[in-house]
Amino acid sequence: MRQYSAVSKGYAELFLPVAYRNQWNMTSAFAVMNVSSSSQEVWVEYRDRNGAFTWSRSLGILGANRAIGVGLAGEAGIPNGWTGWVRIWANGPLAAMGTVENTAGTAGFDAPASSGRAGHVIVLPWMARRYNGRTTGITILNPSTTASASATVIYYDEQGGQVDSDSETIGARNVLGRGAQDDPELSDNWFGSAVIRSTSPLIVVVREDRDAGAGVYAMSGYSGIVR
Image 1 (tube, rainbow, N blue to C red):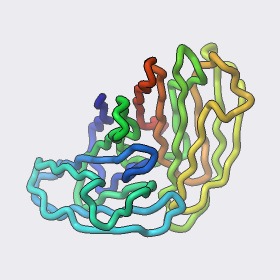
Image 2 (tube, rainbow, N blue to C red; image 1 turned 90 degrees about the horizontal axis):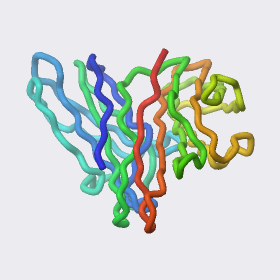
Image 3 (tube, rainbow, N blue to C red; image 1 turned 45 degrees about the vertical axis):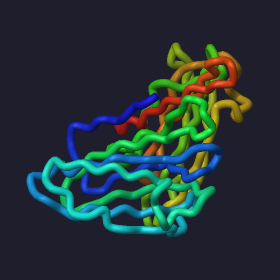
Image 4 (cartoon, rainbow, N blue to C red; image 1 turned 135 degrees about the vertical axis):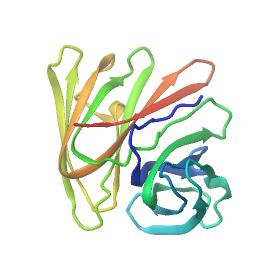
């Protein structure tokens, strides 16, 4: 399974809030495109979920409209069993997308790249807990280098009624993950949406796991919509 987040405008700084190398049978890859009108050098930086620096390197000079793919399995500075997030940047606009391969043989993908646009209000139009075998989880990245973020996630049912809210503090450069299956206020067979409001700009991705039967789990994902 493959999926990506397309954007209409390039950003000089992009983030993949979720990435893996041989962790939980998952390994990430990403592609980045130079959407500027001239060549530019592109860089990548890897940090763990707590924001600690792991590795960084240049991806080289990309010509205008050229794209390059990078698999974390081949990144020498990333240890096996690593999970964290990725920052991609240049002086001019870029576009990127990310995938996650499930190396155990079950079909899988999650964590599309963000457009690079962090926001104080982020809309998640599809969320579920064990609805027709579908359950979602969210990963929230605070990309600030200095400021913690106080964030509130508000959950709604399909009629727009509020069913739950959850407040969290996310440290600078930290990642927070939450699964709908772990929220006691969300009942089985619930589906609806969510809105995240934060004191500092955040980047959010949603992952959906679907039980496809016979021990196979299909995974999909999307990037939260900044409002």
